[in-house]
Figure 1 (cartoon, rainbow over the protein chains, first blue to last red):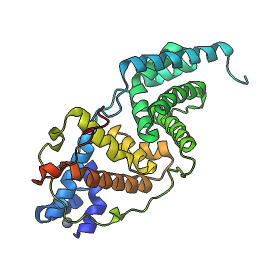
Figure 2 (figure 1 turned 120 degrees about the horizontal axis):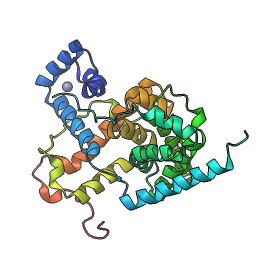
Figure 3 (figure 1 turned 180 degrees about the horizontal axis):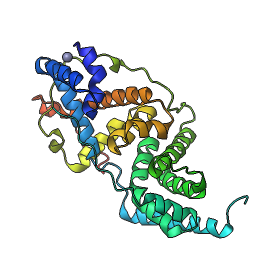
Length: 85
Length: 218
Ligand SMILES: [Zn+2]
């Protein structure tokens, strides 16, 4: 397997959605190709860091304000009745 | 090295019942759906619009639109996927309004240099994120993802941050599965390469770029 072929399979490999044969080939490649090993390992870390980052958390006070705004709009619409019915 | 562990989703068994109650006019049931997904929708909206006010508007507009169109929801997909689809469209409209000079489309298949294998990559230090404070790290991550094209950001946030499947992402974005996969690969590789300058293991600690040093500390 060449490095370019490895890269083609990287996303499926990280997502764990490849068949056993391809997986074995990829891991054979990783055993000797340091470059692809690092790309694979740091890509995995990239995903984990973003997933666990708590980036753009919704603050509780804002959350409450947004929810009451949504609920009152929905209630107003309910009173107005279904459109065009 | 194994696969990344997927985030465990919330149980959706009672969800259809909530949707049906809301459709029958039970605003309380709809409020429960808002509670369940408002954080996710806010995060997605902020990732796409990159603007806090716009993200707030998207949360309100998307939920209200969902409520008003509940009778259009077919129940063939998950409620959440349907809701995400509405929210992504609202967010893209905001983005277009703010940046009319740029075409913002999920269809653009942005060509990048990432089709080739990255070369001469240096490994990262173990637990590289721990070299920074939480605030510094958030600024690095925010700044890094900012530079990605909207179509890449959107696929990345749905797949890797929110944990939607490839099929659900394709459905929410109206893209083919190969298109989702190719954007996801490029988004991941671009983020990886951009983060490397902060996380690489090399002993030039003094040259390491630190965000927020000086003028605008958040
Ligand atoms: Zn290789």
